[in-house]
Length: 473
RNA sequence: GCCCCCAUCGUCUAGCCAGGUCUAGGACACCGCCCUUUCAAGGCGGAGAGCGCGGGUUCGAAUCCCGCUGGGGGUGCCA
Image 1: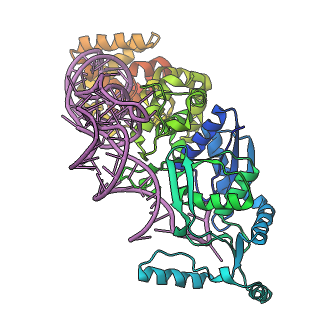
Image 2 (image 1 turned 180 degrees about the vertical axis):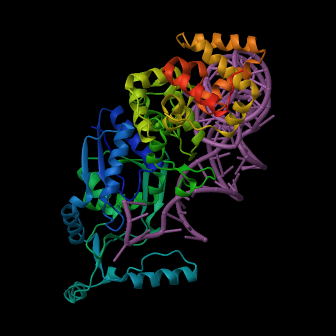
Image 3 (image 1 turned 30 degrees about the vertical axis):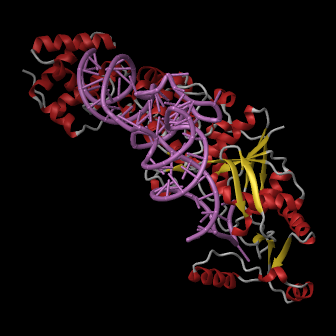
């Protein structure tokens, strides 16, 4: 059975790059009817927090990624300890008593000489007696993995192809810190092996780690899984997408009101392309059916916010069911301080869903449907001050008195006013728009009148009329 | 510095593995027109890469090989 996993560290919000890794890993497992594991890598106690972990799970769930098993590395320290001891016993690892300061010194010296730094191996050659003595003295020690000399580790990456790395490039590396906590390169192997992970799917920044891990698999006698290293996601300036590029976490886009399915869909389009040419819109189920690691591009992709927003808009106007859209929209409406009946929201969105790309922008655009009090923009005020506007409003109020204000009726009235006052259509509509929405652009005035209760339409018009101090006669 | 990865329109990409059908296809963004009470949306059309550069191999290369350049990543008792 195929088993894949996503192994984030809870040291921040879920980054778009990590989210994509999670998605690909998830799609891969589901495609093969396998198991998908979520494993929180919180061995760095300095930076990991429970709060970040909570949000990580929340964001993954929001994206529609569900896991079959869940683990937290901080719950498993005993397991790692056992395997670390095993490695020491078998001679694959050894205690290192070098202090952080000493190592810093080594590194600095290497840098000055301009030679690549590797751990000197000072403690590699300690005798049993020396080791015991130092331990007895209570000197803290880390555990290092003994890297064999002159070994070239080779593996076939599913995405990158043949990769060969000479392990002489790095020295003996730490697998257990002097405070007793295990490090990433070690725990990742123990966990992946014990959890039966068959395919390790992760960012390409892990390629240099892979040979180290393969060495550990071998030392522990575990079968080596298959690896697939995804290219990184870049920012506009073609450097790795990071905070300085602006909004880079799933949460950022969630809060902006980007549709979850659209974000999932968009992220898949970064680096992966479907076998069927030309199509770009896929449901999660379709993605599961179509996704193949072999179809993932090996070159990095630049994140394009515009296209994400376009896709979000597409989902809002034609992919989501109206019911889903309403459910997604209401929290944003409430967040902005508006209240409305679900049925009313439904009627509004049915007519207006084709005019915004994010739910947040939607609330902004649809304010006239929900706001009690309007604020007038400067431009709108200027229109209202036109001499013709007052006459338009006054006439409209007369003509609207005893009729039902359907969109069609409003259009007819506008036309009639235009004729009677000898105005351009634009002048009539501008006056109505300014009074009813406070803006000169936005949703159709006829749609607004169609849905907004008549008394509110009339009161807005009256208010605008009073505002400009209209005197009858 | 050293190690590794990558290289098709501004961006995401198809094509590359099995060389000719590619005067390189699609999408976002951009420009124009249409629709129209505005902004969007929608419809139609346009511009935009000769495939980073240089060598090979071949009758023929975006596609195969080599070199270079450029970009990215790694180089931690972070993950």
